[in-house]
Structure formats: C-alpha cells, structure tokens
Image (cartoon, rainbow, N blue to C red; front, side, top):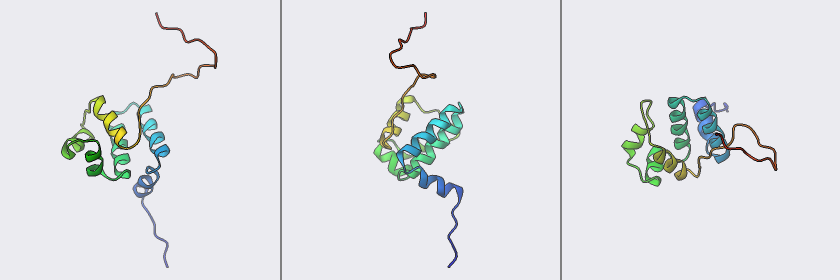
Length: 110
C-alpha cells in the first residue's frame, strides 16, 4: 500500500489546529509587518479551526464580510480582528520589545 502524501497546505492546516502553533504562526506573520501576509495567516488559522463559514458564525460575522475582511485587499478594524481571534480561542497581546529584568522599573517616555 502506497503511503499517502500531503501537501504543505494540508500539513500547515493540521498543525494550526493546535492553539499554540496557531498563536506562534500569527505572531510570526505579524512580526513581518505585512498586512497581506497577516490576513493570509488569519485565513489559514480560520480554515484550521473549522473553516471560514464556521468561524464567521462563531464570531457573529457575515460570511461574505469575513471573506472580504481577510482578502488581500482587506482592511479589517481591530475590533473585528479581536473578535475573530476570540472565536478561535486566541487573543492578541502587546509585549515589550526587550525583556525587562525582574524587579526593574520601567520608565515612561517623556
């Protein structure tokens, strides 16, 4: 019996079913600073978490609006992205660029 081969996309979607993998993938895409790349990453994670229709329903978004929002020319509002992430069991957070030593005080910029 021949071994079934999978495509990169199939392997990626399977890996993104794990929330930790999905979070790392989205963070890496966000670090690139490319809107289209980040929206593609969101589409891939949505596919891994049940598909666009299922995620749109969970996020209480119109399916067509979600497709438009995550298209190459999409320009989603932050509220929509946060809602979408929440529906997939993820959240967005901001972290300092450098690690602050325990007990150090962070100074506010003037």
